[in-house]
Length: 257
Image (cartoon, rainbow, N blue to C red; front, side, top):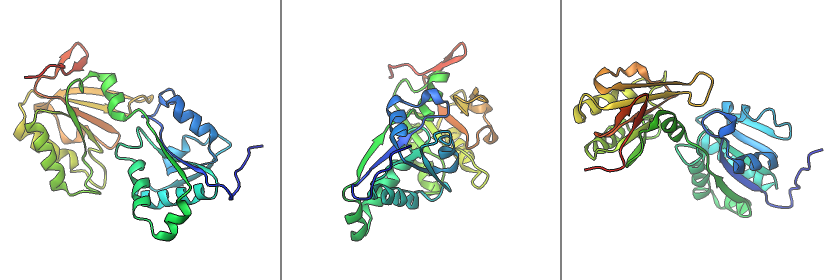
């Protein structure tokens, strides 16, 4: 029988990243936290991956309820439970770690007092960006930046401004959340900027469902790329001006200029 903590002692909140999909890409550190936990909170598909762990109580929620999820997790931990907040990839990359600290930062005094004894730890995971880059070769072998193309939490104008500056700085770029049914225009906006700032032969890499059974990789020149080539399950990597192909692999040289 699984031991349950009592409400008399503050518990622990572990913000974890379960990687891009494959079980063997979950780090041993994260696996140990999963084995020790009592509860797991997260977006439905992420907590569903833990459904076979019978010792866990699962608390799935919609993907737009990050702050409410963080507060619920802190409340459970304050009751003495060992709580997971689950993200895909790494929890610090467009994921739940920031939401947990935002909840702590803006908490009313009563919540701050209740959560004061909770131990919070963030455990890294393998990001979709790094998993995709490894599958492709080494497209992020030099300086690069990461941009979320969703305008759900920031203005579209900010996104295009950052892409333009990154292109002018000749950085490789990794794009998260390029296109969705509700916001299909994100990748199209990015392409418009890239076509203004980059040469037509710039290499654009697409990695869909990396590490899953239906993984799909593709590499195209910028002048051959269409907006419908990427969806929310696709990680897009834009090379810099020196990025090149060697056989089926793509790499960016470590020297520049």
